[in-house]
Length: 205
Image (cartoon, rainbow, N blue to C red; front, side):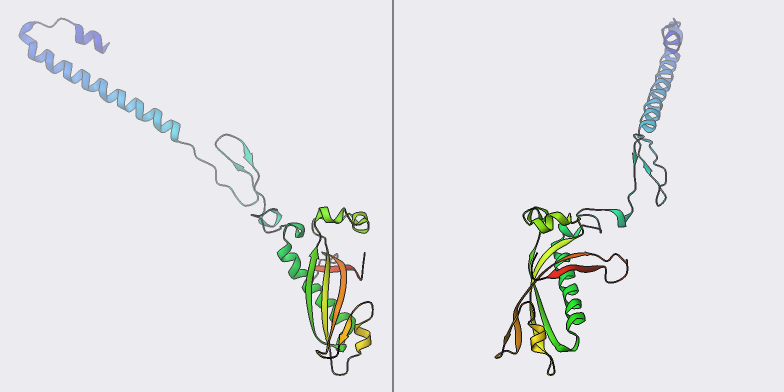
């Protein structure tokens, strides 16, 4: 309709008025075109994601749902609940702590000091090579291991007690050495502290 108005014949005597009218109409067309473009662009960019409360699913703009996994249930390198078989650093610390607990429990006042060295931690592939371990079907949070221990007898300690099973008393140093054991570190079934305990602690599989 605007174009038709522009093309209507206007007498030459009003030529200046025609020029002004054309400029006004063209200006209005330009303003309307720009407004339409801005409206379309704003509509495309406007994507508001709903607020996600703890424990709920996050709904993304595409309409797909991404479950929010609680931190204590995340597993893997970015999570806080990495299985022991994937974290031998933690497993080694827990083995040493648990073996020290066993030494205190087994020998009591007979031991003044002790050293524990973890010599091997078994991977899943290692377990398949040992029939006894293969039959145990150890879980991701159960780690079979080997340790060597050195025990320093107390002044009134019974040295013979410390060498039962394995171990040699070194008179020069006053330590019982060459004491080797195996065992399986696993979660404490009671759920109490300590978190991990040792099962099957002995001199061989």
